[in-house]
Image (cartoon, rainbow, N blue to C red; front, side):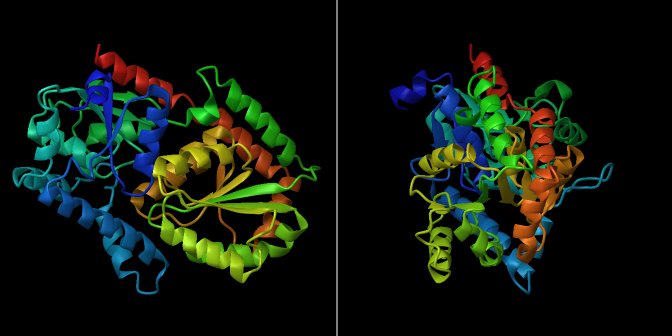
Length: 405
């Protein structure tokens, strides 16, 4: 193990299963300086690990993209995999049993054997390495961060009662769900989601408050400033069709400077090419009020995204981990959820009155400018800032780093 890893108070494990789990890991690491281990890549994967991750990632990517197709066969299978039981209904253990079998076949062995001598505290942002650590009998302290408001049974091990795994959860609802799966209450801490310190600043949140006041000058019903729309692609690149329809409908407003559009592609080269071709086809590729963000390094891409959020007034997104970013005072406009967990995330935002469903793209320009005039955008921004937790990064780091003392 490298000197940097052995001297850290804790390590963060993450993987590319959409951007959400990597994004959460990066936000914590940017504050704590804890190293992030990409456990879906070398040097942590064996042959079986590589196979498991590639199958899981392919299922996620193509299942998500199939949400836009006519047949939606893969999407229906994907939905079934992520099904969350109704309250008081028994939860299926099939996913948990599969992970247990994979561990018996050697999944996770290379990773945890490399850590066994030192046994550092681990903070996982995806369930697979967390469950493998439990079944491996890992001796170090273990924390698992949930990135959604509600979760599938696979996020808890078989017979979770006395397992070596503690949870950081974003909401009381997610805590209740874990308890229903058999996790002991004392192993769960409601921390909130880890927001980027680029946007919150220190624990006093002064930077966040200042940015909100600046955004509110653009959201005022009599403002003549352009409104900036952020369209972040997911790791799977879903809903490229919506972006095409949106661009077609707001060209006049973009050229007039009434609206500004930022498309964030992360490290998704497929999404970047689609966005670039779209902008060229509509003759807005060199327009002052359009921008495409992409970087080969995903963590650099996240930093650019966080920086762009400061000037963002409305975010069009599926209800992924992005729902927690409403706490920054950014109104959310939702594309259809992909998976039961995203439907639950959207419900959480609706309950807190800081997001709305997407209107037909052809009506978007009229809707967004009208929503500013009616003060609806201002209300959504203030509700998100006032109602959602904003200190998750500090809470999580304090909890996990304290355990290592």
